[in-house]
Each structure stands twice: as structure tokens, then as C-alpha cells.
Image 1: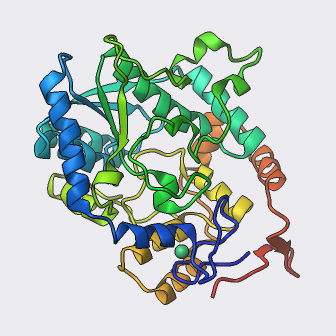
Image 2: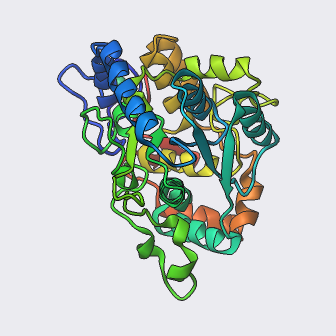
Length: 369
Ligand SMILES: [Zn+2]
């Protein structure tokens, strides 16, 4: 396990390769981002927008997937206010929302002035799929990721909306398995790093049948008039920076987590809308030796907000915290006992990077310095 020399990302993250300077994929992407002609990219986006505004006969020009978080707030605002499109938002309703999450989504549609469609998945199927994904691949949120990509794209097709505007390309922005080429086209988002090579069919059995999984199936991208739905990453056309999005959303009423950062977090505004994602992220610690604190400080290093030295201190202070806040909710939601939970966790522990110390506590073999 080696850490990037500029940020603190370890090369145990799938797809991450340190170059001969000791820099990770995401650091190389950040260098590329700083050489882009953003003005020219903006003109490319204007051309797409103008074409749709001129030819579209549907009720909406553009569909924006939203959670009420700072990035989706920015995407919806940008497409409506800056580009003057008729925007429809689409949210997958969280099954265990937080009060900040409920406030932020309501506040977003009110202050930006947006129509929104919320999809609530049948709880019985959703719970079964999450539990399966937890036990089989240590990734309880896999069905949720799939259903965001598939659900949103299905809505675009049903309502005949010619454009879907996603946020950032996670592989490019954060470093990962997919190609390091920046790209505008998001039409293969159903096979990105969050999904890999699985489909919902891998989860079908006597318990979950095909008819229960419409919103987990990525459709073809055809509109009724035969044209293709254009699916793009806004991060390709607009310099993507979380803190800028935070400032904008705060000015319109976005609220950070009232009780401060969750365990293992050093910021209080990241993924705060629902209670089921923290365990999913924490499992990366077991598999790859890093989780939230590394993701959050790396982001701030890339954007010159903190030094590597400060980041090392923060990560070492936070990474051994367990996401205890919503642990009970997690167990209850999936009908899993605590013993069963830890049995599953230990099946995914990466013994190349973890060993027990003299007191019997698990420790990473390599310390971050
Ligand atoms: Zn790096």
C-alpha cells in the first residue's frame, strides 16, 4: 500500500496507479483540469442547449438528477437560471432520510423554483437487494447507485426529455477504474466505477423477480421521435469544485449537518441527506484501507484548501472512527444482527493491508505519513 505524494490517496483504490512522480490518477486529472480552455467548453455546452431549446417539443428540455446536496443544487440552478432551460428534477427518495436531507431538497425546489419527480422504490425489494449486495459484495449501496442511473434515465425516456445533466464523472474527478480521459458523454454511466460489470439480473432469484426491478434497469436512450437522449457530465463543461457549489447552495438556504460532522468525517455537508450510505463508504476502509476522511481531505488538497501535512493529521485522527450514528438504523433496515454484520465485514477484510496488533486490534500495516 503506497500513498500518493501530493494527496493522500492509496494505490489500493481500484484503478489507481501512481506515476513515476508518485502522483495518483486524480492528481493527474487535477493537472489536466487546470489546462482546459473552460471558455471553449462553455461554448460547446451553449450549442447543445441552443439546439434543444430550438427543436424540443416536450414539456421539459432537461432532466437533472438531484438529492438536495450542494452539487445537484448547482446543476439544477445552472441549467435553469444560467442556461434558461425548462428543467425537471428527479430524485430517488431516500428510505431513511435525515431532517437536513428533507429540508435541503424542499428548500432547493422552492428557492430555485423547480418541478421534481420523486421515485420511491418498493421497500421490500429494495431491502432485499441491499442486503444481498452487502452480503455478497460488501457493498450495500450497489442497488441504490444502479437505481439512480436507471431510474433517472427511465424518467427521461418516459417524459421524452432530450437531455440529462449529471454532475461529475467520478472516475475522472476522483480517480478510478474507468478511462482517465475526460469525457462529456455520460451514456455509459450504468457501467461506471460504482456499478462495475454487474447488472440487476445478477440479483434475481426466488426472492426478487424481474417484474420488481423496473427502476433498476437502464433503458436504451431513445426518445419517442427516434432521437437519442443526450446524457452529459456538467463537470466536463464547467470547472467542478464542491466548495463553490456549497457557497451557492448555502446562499439559497442549504443547511449543513446540525450536529456537526459524522464520525470519520471532517466536513459537515457531504452526503448528509440519508442514513444508509455511511456503512457502505466505511466498508472501503476494510477492503482498501481508506474511506471518508481520505476522500474529503483529498478533495481539499486538489483544490488547494489544505496542505498534505494537515490532511495526514486529519486522516490519522479520524479514519479509525466507526460510523456509529446510524449503525442501529442500518441493522434494523436490513434485518441483520450485529454478529451477522461483523461476520460479513470480516469476510471482506483485506489481509494484505490489515494485521492484528499485540492487543488483538486490527491495524493497517502501513501508516500514512
Ligand atoms: Zn493524488
